[in-house]
Amino acid sequence: MQSVSIIGKRFLVLFVLSSAIVIPALSQDNSPWSRYGLGDIVPSGNIANRGMGHLGAAYNDFQTINFVNPASYRRFGQQRAILELGLDVNSRKLSNNKGSTYTSNNAYIPYIAGGFQIKPEKAKYDWGLAFGLRPITKVNYSIQDGGRISAGDSVQRIYEGTGGTYQAFLGTAIGIKNFSIGVNGGYRFGSADYTTKVNLFNDTVPDRYRAGQKKIRNNFGAPLVEVGVQYKIKLSEDTAAKKRSSLHLGAYSSLQSNMRVTRDEAYETYVVIDDAGTEQRLDSVSEIKGIKGNIIYPSTYGFGLMYDAEGNGNLRIGADFVISNWGNYRYYNNKDSLQNAWQVKLGAQYLPDITGRSKSYWGQVMYRAGFHYGTEPYKIDGDLKTYGITLGVGLPIKRYSYAELNRNNIVNAAFEFGQRGNRTTSLLRENYVRFTVGFSLSDIWFIKRKYD
Image 1: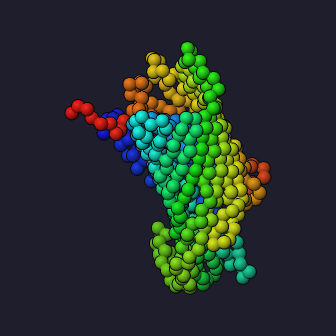
Image 2: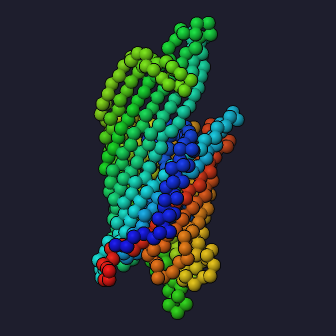
Image 3: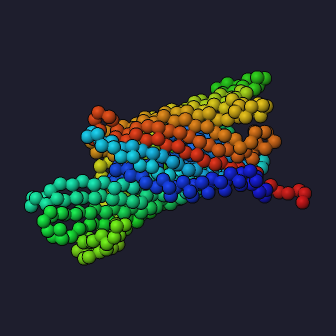
């Protein structure tokens, strides 16, 4: 087995070190919508997909791992192995209809994944395998409100939440001629902590009241199954001019699962003992541990198509439609302020030169653009509309050549800006800017040495 290239190693080390520096510096996220369900939903695609409006149903590429549709795993090149990881840096500005605003920044690793081709050398079918770990929801919010009780004293309420859900998966796909089918299996797990604090204040008797809080901790997990299919329709082919075009169709589903959850509850009074906000319990009013129950994690369905035209260059244009059944979400058999959501996604990718004959480096860069529009699952003051515009590039670390077809290393980057909520009808709106960068490292594996 050959080792990965020295260039790839240097970029990988630099990427990991950069992530370790950036993530702690920007971990100030605050999303009020993450209070509902299992939290704010993390974009599911890799960074190449994100640059194309988050397309994933019909997309396949031997240089990236499209874990949205596991049927794409059949596309990995023979004896080719890929390692991918990414970094997501985003900034969001929240505003309400009273003119108040709040800005927060955040950074996290959206996925780490690997994949390779495992088919026998002379087989008439393609067979690929992929694995990885990625977050799928995040809980991170801190909300305050206040008022007065009937006695005239002031009251302050603080709602806080932290945690998230993760997915570890192992997937495989088999392709015969123009048809491929794939499946992801694995485990979906996570935790979520929710705290509600109540502080009462009396102007004349400062120590009349003690602060109280309710603390809930959830730990949950369950196996997962995701399936996908893709089919390629040949449209035209000109052998002499080396031009051809095709239409790719794709569909995928993340099946509904019943997650086991354990909840701990505590009601207590407390006091803050220093300027850093350290809390010390005074009295436990009630404490119950190990409450067993279930969470219904809802299903998602996606459908899409992609037009692929290849000559000296390559052009891809696609569209997806995705439905998420969050209205079926249940927590200990209770509903939440959630509803079914949908999204329409449009995207394109253009590579000026695929022959390797271009003298320009920029002729071998992949240029991407996209748009998405739809609704979020959170139903607070009516439908929460969302849209985003994306731009992206795939930057080869060195010039492409057929001699090293299976050893290309690529830096993918995507930029996105968008909005959640409506300026005139929503009580709360969010404008966001997101920059993502990822490293796709590949090399030739499983080669039997003939000479030492």
